[in-house]
Image (cartoon, rainbow, N blue to C red):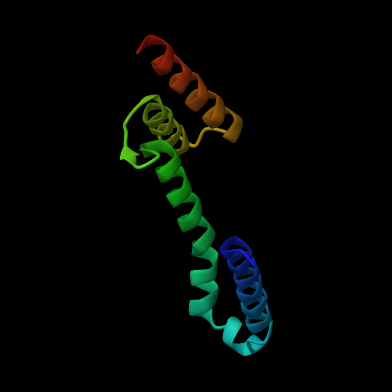
Length: 102
């Protein structure tokens, strides 16, 4: 058996074990207010990290290019409480213009 298949099987077994262990946690532990608060913040942290790495990284290098301008405009639009389609379109247009004229 190749090392890749061992890694796939091992990762699958680990994923199954984590899912099983997660389903055996008592409900009263999960209903604790601190756990509820942490659980509500995890998606925000993960999406923020994803946006940061997709915006500022290219393979193993740190770059600041047209994507950073688009994210900056999106943040400004969100602060101004613009509707979501306006945020996305303004970020895309800004990124495209900076890319085109750079």
